Length: 149
Image 1: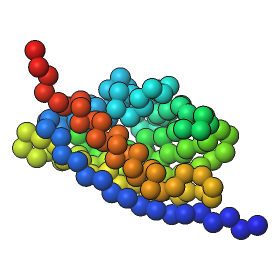
Image 2 (image 1 turned 180 degrees about the horizontal axis):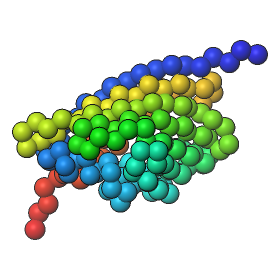
Image 3 (image 1 turned 30 degrees about the horizontal axis):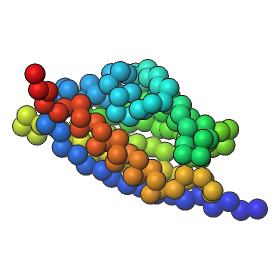
């Protein structure tokens, strides 16, 4: 039986009204990362080269999902490279490689996230991953929203 793997790449760009140090910290600090990336899920993060980030939650059908990422490169305020897997229950769903690039833009920060994914048959679809990642980046914007007294 030949199983066909779907290969897909997407790139998302966002501008945040905050200095690059604050935007990078939102990726590097476990409490901040959980707020925008792992809402309502179990989350742990060891933000060092070789360290793991693990998110455990459930999909709409109640299946246990586990996302595990290993940091391959961390250049503060410049770039984060990681490899990751997603399991639905005990079944591998996706394998991906992700880069997040940070660029100062005056008092703001521009990020470019590119993900190369391999999606196994009958599992997550590339469009779902892109949509979910875009939603996470939109939620991240709340980290930089002005606070009112």
